[in-house]
Every structure is written in C-alpha cells, then in structure tokens.
Length: 122
Image 1 (cartoon, rainbow, N blue to C red):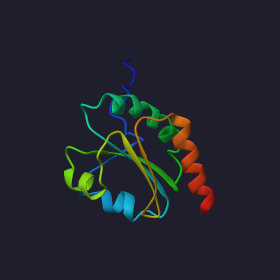
Image 2: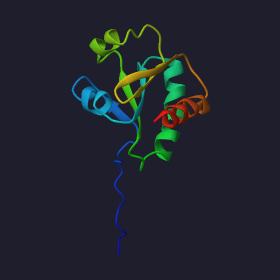
Image 3: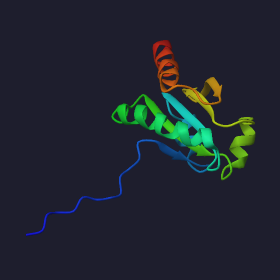
Image 4: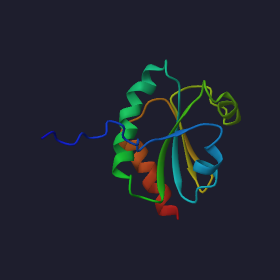
C-alpha cells in the first residue's frame, strides 16, 4: 500500500507583495508589517531572505505582525513612492504608517528588536 504523498507546495510565511495587494496587506493592516524591498539580482537581498523567513515562521499564527517582501523591479511605482534607492531596504509599518526604515543588510535580531519596540508602543 502506498503512503499518501505530502503536498510539495507550501504557503510561504513571508507574504509576497505587489501593487494589487500592498494597500490591503500593509497600509490597511492594523498591526506591524515588516516589508523587505528587494531585487532578484541583489546578493545581500538573497542573504536577508532566509533571515526574515525565520521570524516569519515564528510569527505565523500571530495576527499583529506580518513579514512581507516586495520586488522593486516588478513594482517600480511602489519603490519610487517609498524612495527606495538602495536595497535591501526594510520598512517597518505600524498601522499603515512608516515607523522605521533600515537600508542594508542587518542581523535578524535587529529586525526582531524593532518589531518588539513597535509592539510595545501599542
């Protein structure tokens, strides 16, 4: 008897943003959203991706904090709107407002600390 196969498609804990869902997922969200503005060709962005995946996994059942990514090349209008000039560029939104912006690669714990600071402001 064959064993049931597991689905290979998993829902990512990191939300993939685009111009269609940015308003709903980030600006309308009444919590904290960490948005990683990145490009596929960016080496430091590739290093940052798994670093953000770990907190996203830890926060998967949380309804107050989201971790999201936005490809700047596919969503140039949003990159321009938020004046993204260097990547990786992480913006932390709190209730739809920019709370903090970090340019360049940082340690995973730096992002966690900023999220915690924003949670304590509530």
